[in-house]
Image: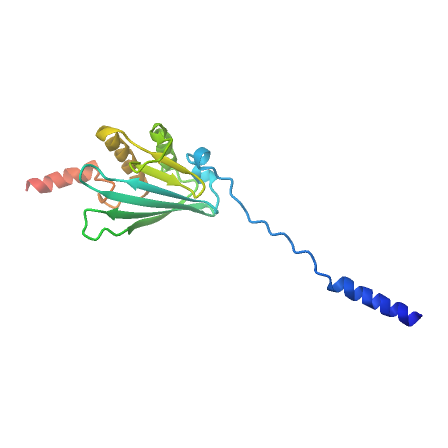
Length: 189
C-alpha cells in the first residue's frame, strides 16, 4: 500500500510539473499620438514608436521639386531626415539633403508654430494638388493653397522655418538677403 501511495504521489507530481504553463502575455507598447491634435506639439507628444512623414511640393510655375521629411524620436532628441527630388534634372532621383538631430528642448526649429500658423490651409479631402501632406501611418493631414500669391507665401513660410533647422545654402530654401546682396554685387562685375 505504501508503495502504491508513493507511485501515485510521484505520478501526480510528474503530471503537475509537466503540465504546460500559461505563457506570459506580452503586450506591445502602443502610442497614443494623434496627428490631428498633437502635431503642433509633436516634439513633446510623440514617442519612439511614432514617425511623422512630411511631403512638400516646392513646385512653382515651370519648376518642379519635391521634399520628403521623416521625423522620428530617439530618447531626448528628434531626428529630421530630408530628401529632395528635382524634376529639372535629367535623372530626377531622391537625394538625401541632410539629417539633423535636435534636442527636445530646442526652441530654434519652429515647425510646430509653422503648422499652427497655416491651419487655415488644411483640406478636408487630400488631393493631388496638395502643397504639403503630413502622415503618421494612422492619419493624414493635407494642406493646399489657392493661387500663386498664397502658394508663394506658404512656400516662403516653409523655407524660413526649415532654414532654422538646416540651411543647404540656397539650394531649396532660398537665399538670405545677405546672400542675394552678395550675388547682386558679383553679378554687376
